[in-house]
Length: 247
Length: 247
DNA sequence: CTATCCACTATTGTATACGTATTCAGGAAT
DNA sequence: ATTCCTGAATACGTATACAATAGTGGATAG
Image 1 (cartoon, rainbow over the protein chains, first blue to last red):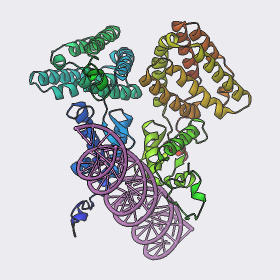
Image 2: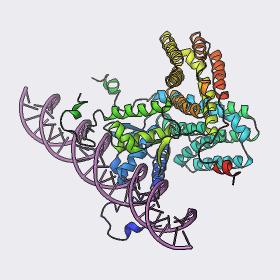
Image 3: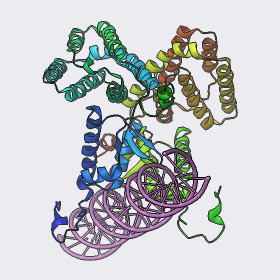
Image 4: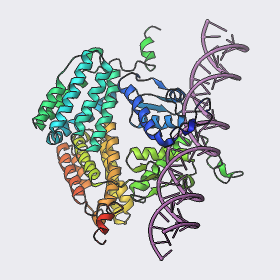
């Protein structure tokens, strides 16, 4: 109704108090998605600091809202909040990577039979479109987009099962996987065009739940085995190890 | 250190600014656990409203901290936040109950083989103690405590697998299960002393991962089948359905 | 007497101000 | 020259103040 009422009179130099919580809720959702996407697309690299003031300035919301969003991202393990140091994009450890992939293998594979039961022709079309867009992004060299689409594909697959709780969990796992790939994935790894997703759709469309399950296991194992945990701690911890020989 | 310092001198009528973030972090953790436990122990029934001012008064923290805690509880699905209405203890729907138990069956059962591999004699002792305390609580008629201990037992079991991600997920599922039991469980259901947990420990201690897995499935199926979804919506939604006949 | 509309109150959403801790840089002393 | 200490600046944690909204009760008109 009176959405622009705040502009009627004077306008304070800095914030203009547009809070007006009417669109506030959606505004927060938009900001959350923006940051989340940037992390998943690896535009924000693991370890990158997320200063509250900077985000305040970028999104034109007060620190209150930013903090709420950062807390949410922290619960999803996408950002790490250190008590007096603020938030930064999570740098997954090798153990976390192992756990995440073990979880994905268990849940995503376990969901395939259910997905095969519930899938509709409409779903098949949608999935094929997603796979096509993913291939297109890869060919165009837009690796960021491809990673995001790949995660979205797995999320969508989990949703087919009809179990919202497990689908949400898979969604989180996929987001974290993107971070894991950013840290431990080899560069050209994502570049190789695999048709795994297409094959997965084929099995599901044919109602072959068990085949889809086995193939998903294969798919995830392949991704996981492409990770290299050698360069593990590249930051501070192994300075002694690195320079210990020279002194 | 200065925990009771606030009582030493004057005491402002409302807040006395004890913020002093030093212990603030742990203080929040304590409050979170207090509310969470109260919900799991069913001292706070599903549907109960959690007004921010009331919690502020009870725990002597400002609304800022309370809101943060409520947000966290909302992400764990223990409380539901309605945009302009505030927070209330979540009343799970029948569909959510189904999803939660499907998830528990998949994950908890899938974790049993791993747990059987990693379990130590120390773990066995601890688990037996937990089971014993659960029985004691049941005999003493302390149903709240028994429910809490039962959830803790399942959580501990999941931790044995060594997969922190899946263990945290199971932990959430167990908390939600407590809510589900509060809404859909028959009264005397929890009262029946079953030795399922003891048997589970036996299988794991013997390294019989597959047996434990099968038994866990049986255990969860038994709990789920004891739920009655008949009295489903007892609040507002079906007023038309109920009184529609009379007018 | 009843029904509808308006106003008030209670409660949440948002922003900001203040206090405190941590970090980085610069200088002094050994 | 190097190391340690001190101070200033930066950024986070907490509380409070202000704004908006939804629910409730009262008043008025039919």
